[in-house]
Image (cartoon, rainbow, N blue to C red; front, side, top):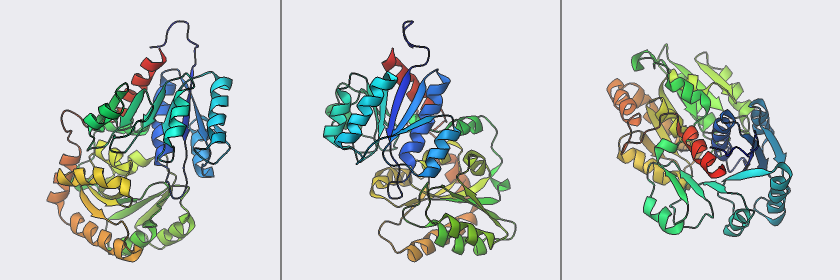
Length: 361
């Protein structure tokens, strides 16, 4: 906890970016931690070089301030801008999230006299210059992290999946029985860099059985949003949700989810949604492989595949899985189970916030 001499509302600076190719996951998981920090009397301040307008509006709607920095991201001007914001706002800590920050940049931030918390999705074999390191992946090598970052506090594994408050609330409610969930959820993240939402929608919507609906969740930064809306409007069984603040509700109603293998996996695990997971980026492969090996989800690797070919494989697998109620029940049970005492219970962001609060003391 904060010392009695600390200010009533200390500031934590959150440095993360989002682009069409990078996706929005880095900012969204920081948003989850920001919510928990705000509940603890902290003022989160987001700082970005690159951020789509839709995501900036999302932060504003959540009540969080945003300051834009001079680019390029990870460059000298960026680092100088962070230093200036630390001084101006008397920031007590930095949260850093992104693959594009170099060792030099990370070391410079660590030298500003405030603790750094780093999100990471890597193998843990490189120094991150952080006092607190978070990796919520299912296949995390704790020994590698300890060797490369011997002085860091480690928050590793699914128990630290940073989910937004809506999932914590949804977790506390009884889930509808799986056989009563007559909708499929299609979501490929905030920007869908692989461009799979549209071809999957066009193939899946007309192939669903009578009485089964399709929810398509699209980030406001998706460049194909208008085309997806137009395509969805052609099918009476389909609803397109753009930048929805009700993702947890969509998942609670889903008897099956088709999702990219990013941060959405933690949300689906929290609500025990049977899932067909699609690997669209190299950094998703390790975690998705561990999930597949444990039988917690079916996995399709779509890296490097033609969009039409990948969409056909995904939809064929989804149709087969939808008709196999027993398989979906098994997936639901397994994805909701923890490993080594850890499970995605919706409290990950709160745990991270508590650990960060100890660094502020």
